[in-house]
Length: 183
Image 1 (cartoon, helix red, strand yellow):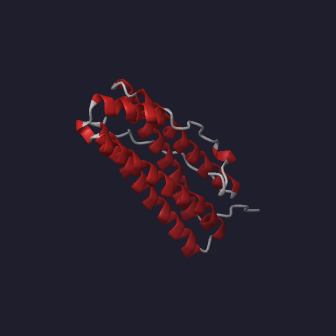
Image 2 (cartoon, one colour; image 1 turned 135 degrees about the vertical axis):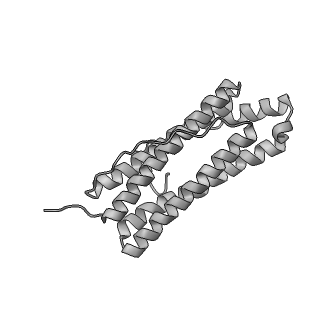
Image 3 (tube, one colour; image 1 turned 90 degrees about the horizontal axis):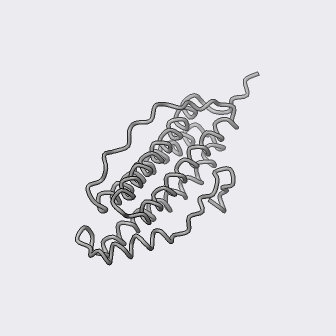
């Protein structure tokens, strides 16, 4: 008996998104290494935590596909982009990555709606809400850096920004524990 409850197209889109989340994790890990190498341990720690969160998102997609009788496919992950040239470049890269991810998530929501796959549509609502938070977080990074003076910020301003991001709560919940009320 076939117990698969996903269309082939939705299964592929979800697998693709799982891989996109893994790529995001690698990108933020790479950015974190860059920041760490530049002496921004607080920013690096923030990016490392964000990398773990993106990995957790990939696991959430994997588990959903498996729970619906499908089999997610792990693809080769593209290399992360080149090291940023500056903190502005780094934070803008984070924002761009989140906006691209939002676009991909909206496409899956559209597919689920078109196919009347209400389970997948409902599952994706958590990610729609999450992307609002992710884009806001990325925009806040850009805003904080602008307030500090952007690429012309003083050492003192950058130290304060780095320390602020170091002190940001670092608990990244496991994907299995996430719910719509507690992402």
